[in-house]
Image (tube, rainbow, N blue to C red; front, side, top):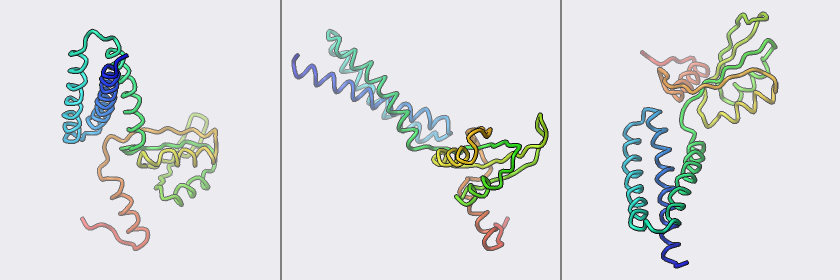
Length: 187
């Protein structure tokens, strides 16, 4: 095979991988309401796509380019998901429901810096405790590991928070000021 053919196939694959990865991140930014960042990513996504498709169109007779184009799309999807998981944007609500005493779990989570709200409730089979904690997505693995270490069979759910009245960082600051200095933010 000629080196130019291989070089162009690799370029098409790399460009397609990059444009689909950027496209995955763009879609995530749209879903999180970050329109300016989504628009910037969309610009680069389409610019890279034009380069990749131009290479393919100017070399329609070689099936290797088709394979490179399609493979780049598949690999770009994979890379985009991995990158999104690494940057872990967003806020999660973790809900824990138990009919057992969870004081140790609550204290462990609080010692790790997570706020925990406890509610008493009535479940199908009687009294239960419901615990809520709002966390950054990057803390998800730590919180779930803490929960499972406490009780591998405990029931919990994790939901993405679409909107909060104030940012999580501000909530932590308010609780820190109030709990350590008896201060409250002025209205």
